[in-house]
Image (cartoon, rainbow, N blue to C red; front, side, top):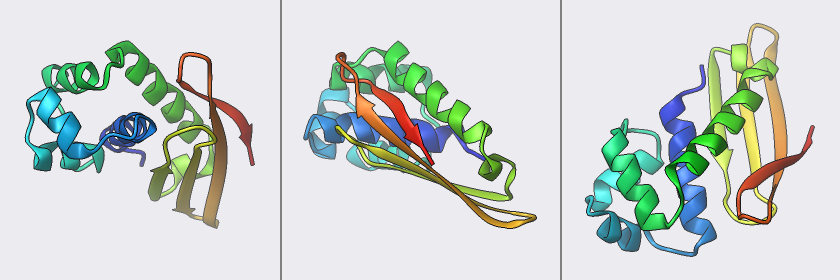
Length: 131
């Protein structure tokens, strides 16, 4: 099962890292505790819409753009064999040339999908290859 909070956290972390900003900088600007922001980025806490809006504002990224990125990632995850797996792990690395790896263990054993991303002209990730 793919968790929305995990994909959202990965997307927020990618945005922060692409800007080369620390958790402390963003948490201060968003007026949220450093620990809570860390938990949101790690997919351990469900963020409210108000908190998401505050984090996005602190990052200078429209909430709609973050949600679009989350939706695109979720779509890729749902169309892979790993999506039907009993366990799925998403790892994203921010910045240009980012990679997303979906790994799952299903009834036929481990399955894996690697998706390579580049930044478009607006700084958003776009899928350029999948293997």
